Amino acid sequence: MILFMFDSFLAQILVLFLLYISALRIFFLRIPRIDAAAVVSPFAFMVAVVSFFIWGFSVQLAALMALSFVFFLTNFRAILRLSSELYVDHYSVPFVIATVVELAALIALSVFVVQFRPVRYGVSDFAVQKEERDLAGSFANGFLFDDEISEKVRGKVSGRVFVYRPTEKIEWISSKDSIFNKPSENSAGNSVAAEDFSSDQAPLVLFVGSPYASVLEYEPYLMMLAQEGLTVLAADFFPTDMTLFSDYRNSRLFRRPELLRMKFEEEEDFKKMQAEIDGFTKRGYEALSRIAIVNFRKEDGSQRKIYYLTDGLDTESVFSFSDKFSENVAGMLQLETIPEYKTSTFGFPEQTDVLLASKLGLKRDGEFFIPRYMAFKTVQKIGSALPKKNVEGQGEIEGEAEETSENEPMNKTDGEKI
Image (cartoon, rainbow, N blue to C red):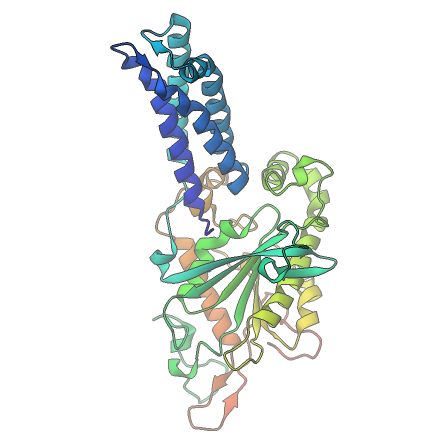
């Protein structure tokens, strides 16, 4: 099942629509009839509950679940009458008053849901394809794709890998202002043309979501990277050995909202957990690196280079997992080092979580300005890390990589910048 943040909003609209049917029927009773519309209130509650298990907790969905449950309780007697096929010729005064109050709450909630709706987008909007694959396993024992495990031993889903690719074969990663179309600043006297860069040469881009900012919170940016010709592997991990809380809050359905609440309301307690959160994220990058190296190779079967994107991890933390794959690593970019990126560790809430964006002082952005700009800067960084060809036929020249952090180069083990 391919999930997008806007799909959650569509599910919420469905719940609202069903509740309006339930509420407005009191104004359309003219002759005695079987009250068939009473059945929509429990159905609305069921849709809200299913949506919760798919997308997890959100303020909008929690409010819808609560209101739909109230509708269900108010209509319980009507449902019993419907099950007995009894005719209804009028509604009682208490029922009408309760329904009018519920209708007022429904209108207010509708405005809230629509006002803070996520930006609509899909794979066709960016000319990319998206694939989702479930993982089974743990940080201690490693992960396998769920379809590679026998049905008899298959456990519950412990993670999910999202693969973003361009839908059309792109011979080079290019845009008019990209570094791929400019002379190399590090190759004196050599002019580097766009055709010197092939998609086969481009590394796999790896990104791991955090416990409070999943891949879907970064998806507009990741899709735009794929639009530029890159293959992006992004992953969320939630195995049994990833324990931040000792109760229900450790569930992936509640972990993100609880951590966000703590980040804004209990800052000191959140800071105490930061090292543990970063630890899980680092182990996620290590697991995803192994998955990428083993399962995503070039057409000739050789291994592809990998390029890390991180958000909120310091350079030493990145070295802690990148040094284990030094022969495969082409470089890394810490997203928070780009000044225009104002929502570090939260993803891109201007598109994916408008309520959170408003809390951060930002507005809904349907033009994707920041994700588009971040993708452009990322392509520039990756371009500076790729080997350049000498147009005079002197073979390949390893252009010095632009430093991937403000303080030090990527590889500290052998002194080579990659």
